[in-house]
Image 1 (cartoon, rainbow, N blue to C red):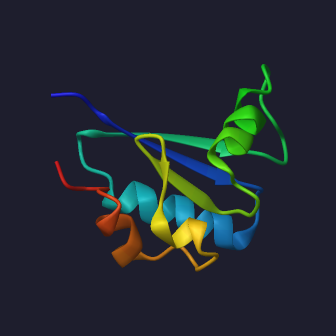
Image 2 (tube, rainbow, N blue to C red):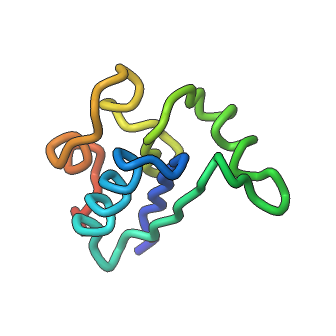
Length: 91
């Protein structure tokens, strides 16, 4: 069974911290969670390139297996229900 890749894009804001906390709370053993802080960037600029590739223009944003979660594509807040609907925590 392959792991579900969950990427969380943040900018160090309180809402971002809550989104990361919620994703980690919901994630199951089959979820691999990666957090990217776009404010700090990353050594290879991979996080900003990924954000562009996924069409992310606001944070927090959550991507599950390469697909931007529905809540994040419609500029709604990250919610428990939206993350579950995206497949997080569903073994």
